[in-house]
Amino acid sequence: MDERRKAEAIAAARREIARRIARFCTSLSPEEFEKLLDRMARVQWKYDVLPIVAESTPSTVERTELPD
Image (cartoon, rainbow, N blue to C red; front, side, top):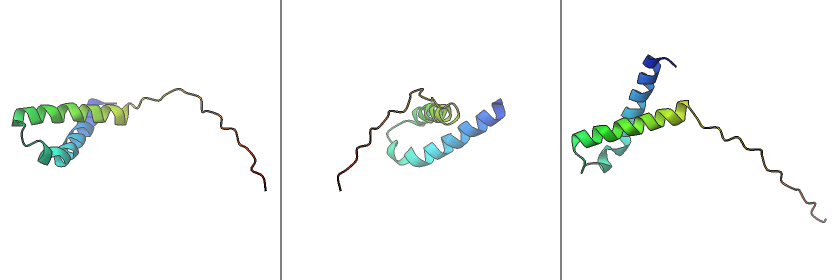
C-alpha cells in the first residue's frame, strides 16, 4: 500500500474517532487527546487493512435426527 493511501485512511479514521469520542475526553489536554487519536487511528487502520486471519479449521457439528 502506498504511503498516500495509508495517510488518507489514517486521517479518515482519526476524524471519525475524534467525532465519536470528543465528548467523553474533555478531561484530557489537547496534546493528550491528539496523541490518543493518533494511536487509535493507527490501530483502526491496522485492523482494517491488515486483518489477522486466524487459521483454524471449522469445527464439525454433528447433526442428530429428531424423532417424529
